[in-house]
Amino acid sequence: MSESLTSLSARLSIINDPLAPAGDRLRAMEQLESRALGKPRETVETVDGKTAVDDAIDRMSTEELEAWVQRGKHLRAAQGGAAEH
Image (cartoon, rainbow, N blue to C red; front, side):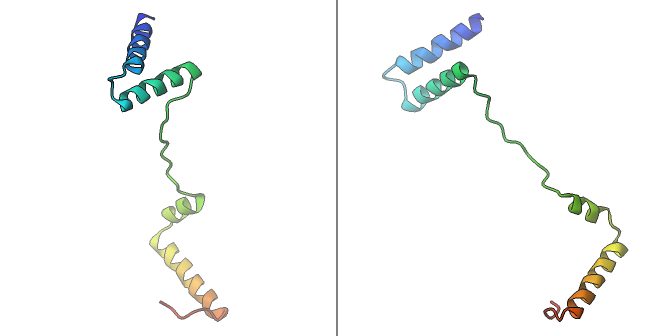
């Protein structure tokens, strides 16, 4: 508990010090606000971003992928699709 009191006292002295840099004073105010309101710390969550389709494609063999490409070409031709790239 004394550590909390010490950090509270340090933050208050920075906030009340007119000669302290504005950025330091603002940071101390934000820290006190976060502590008082119980705000969670901001963290960045990293997400793989892969869908089930991506996973299924990753598991396919080269032959299976080539077969899907060929089916796509046949469908495009049957529908009168654009010229091949």
